[in-house]
Image 1: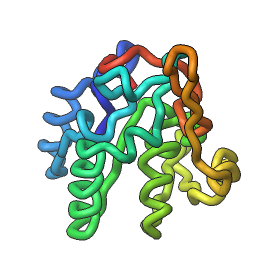
Image 2: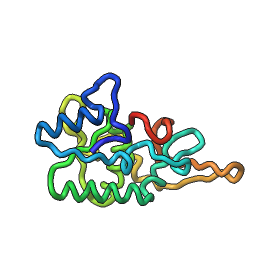
Image 3: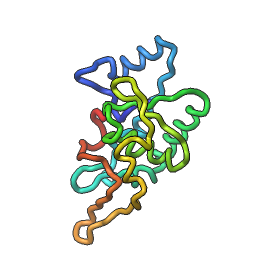
Length: 162
């Protein structure tokens, strides 16, 4: 399972078609859920005025829920890996959105780091903020939203490498 748009200028083996082909040749099933679980959703309602993705809104969407159901169903049958270009989970939507929702449902996730080591969700620095209440402020002036549960930096909306 992979990010919104699997593409890399620096690592062409991670471009969706090449990745799919290589995994199939190795006998590994590839399921693309970038539309459902990717970090750059379509729709202005999923972004604040600065361009950060509002993860609380994504987590409540039908599209995300259906993708998460497929992910969990797949994980019940076999070992599953979800991929993104971020090496450090603390800054990645896999951790900040997908893992957080899974953790809230008592489903464990191990994070594979660049050196091949595994890191527990509870050991990622950004995990400490998960106990904070999730809220969203909406401006009375322009209707823009702001939330602490959002992408760590602004992103290009609806596509691009994630």
